[in-house]
Image 1: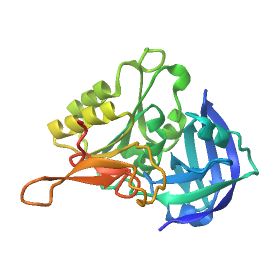
Image 2: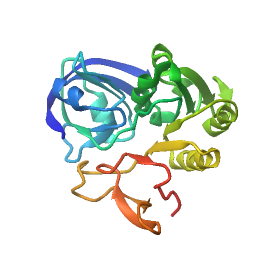
Image 3: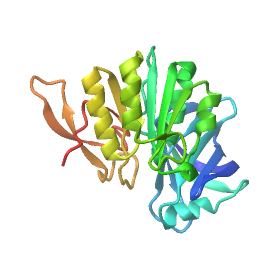
Image 4: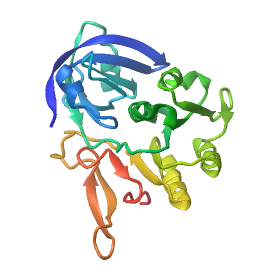
Length: 259
């Protein structure tokens, strides 16, 4: 179930260069939303909506939070909106993360970090967040993870902040010495592929949030198809699913990352 309407922006900040953080007052959407879902935002003058992950949900305040990067003229137009102005939203959309009892590791790569804040916050002290960025100037949300009680491990490609290296290296080191019941990940496809393989190696459940170009956001246009394995048959069968409706969160064992 999702809602559509014009909702006011109640807070806006610039998290890093080209990255904006907005909070929108939309009680009916906040009430329905779960970590891992996304919204479709309409920029003035554009026909197609832009899919933006839901970063935070405050059901009591009736707000959702979205952090997005300017990647083209559409998101640039969205970034021009200010507090007090309305934004056209369809949300919540898609299938989100599954919360379980136990210890979690949440892995975010770049702008794939915002979607994992919601699920990490549900675990609090039972979550370790491993996030990676190009450099110190691109780092976002570290204080938010700490405020939620999570342990944080920061990695940068150039070593200008945190650990010099990739999130996969930090994740493997964590898995070698810590009990982990589930891994959540969102980021570039090569990163997700490596994490899925690592989860399989260590025998840890893993959910990945996929990024895919999409138009409708509700499974009608079929433009965001991805290859998966249907494992509930005698022999695994390859089937196409849609990131907007069946995802964006999938069991990592189902996703075919090659090809």
